[in-house]
Length: 168
Ligand code: SF4
Ligand code: SF4
Image (cartoon, rainbow, N blue to C red; front, side):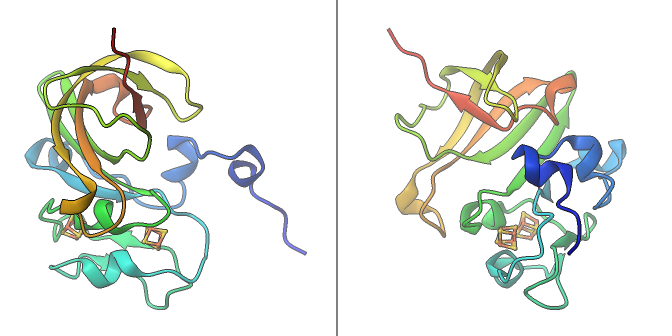
């Protein structure tokens, strides 16, 4: 029996582990325009991301393979983020000293455009505050999960993977 990788035992994957499995987009590409990055290292029978991609940027020879994105073919449409049932696709765009992260947001309440939210890392720990730039509600996405785009300090681009809404 093969050994269970540390990220499966732990329940989350670090950026270092992720980019030991898939290529990391170059700094130049991250600054050019939004790019989709799958955080889906398990060989599970699933392929809606590949099916929805309008530019065939997602390669996955069989549904049991992991998705690999051709970052040059990705047009940043966010459909893979919208449809992924595993909440495993994110988009990243570096803009100056900020990064814009597009992510699924399943928890209630849904933040509003312009709202300041608490940024959470891969462990669900607060790591700072950021502003919500766009919100696509459930009924307007391809899947069942709303997606949001949040602006975070660029040094947190690969740490922030969720947000918490705090009001009142
Ligand atoms: S953002 Fe759009 S173009 Fe890019 S990989 Fe996802 S579905 Fe394909
Ligand atoms: S849709 Fe999501 S869970 Fe399924 S293969 Fe693509 S990235 Fe992985």
